[in-house]
Length: 324
Image 1 (cartoon, helix red, strand yellow):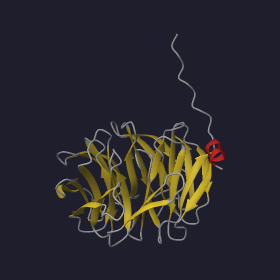
Image 2 (spheres, helix red, strand yellow):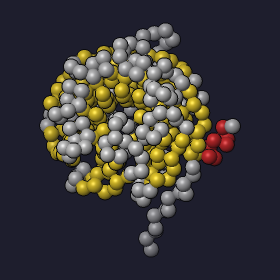
Image 3 (tube, one colour):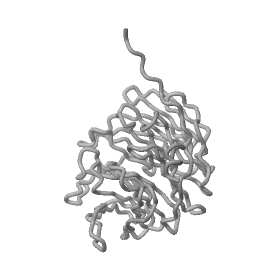
Image 4 (cartoon, helix red, strand yellow):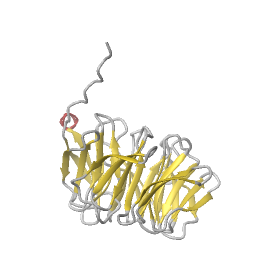
């Protein structure tokens, strides 16, 4: 007899464990390191903070950008962190360094407008993809600091770039309403997944298994797409998103969920398969622009815009009770 697949674990609600204010302006991005031992946050104040993922205590503040930061990406080994800034540069930082040492190991210059998105190739810390308001997707060699490929990818600002897990292709999204797949080696456009002139694509990323793309559009919609055939499998709604490029995430440590911020100041959690809202996390006092799911623990981080400026940590109830 064939065994039935195990039913998903029952949903355990998340609740806020703690909040911190490591920045003087809006928190634009939150990212747990792949090893789970650090939480990186970025801000419109031009700084990156490295926080404890349990206490939210500030371990280090990384300074060097001369304008706000929109995105962060960790290299797979968690040694390096990349930041994308309105100062038209990307910076690569050493996460572990002697106190007082300059942690910036590379400044990548070439974009002619704001750099809005950055992503390390999961297979090598020597390659980064970026997207910007100059409508290009750029591929960088970290060791030399050179831009190895500049792709005229879209007709409006590029809102997101993300490598598939084997590093072979990149997905990009844009305010022009399209979402495209690029060959990471040649820069060739392999496929246009969406081309909706009416609604801007505010965020796009590959699923952890590399089979799907999660696409956010500025009509209060998140869609899960099978990029092999271009079909939309699931649509998630109920949140508010018509203005900002809100970063979403997959949660896979306890069941399979989609997590996103929202312009109603909440964090939304959907059941990936059922598409239903499982929970709405309240506490922020401005738009939640970014969320991140811990790689091994049932833990979510979120960041709020200027009228909030907090980083908040959410845990499932059983874990929360142990921490008190």
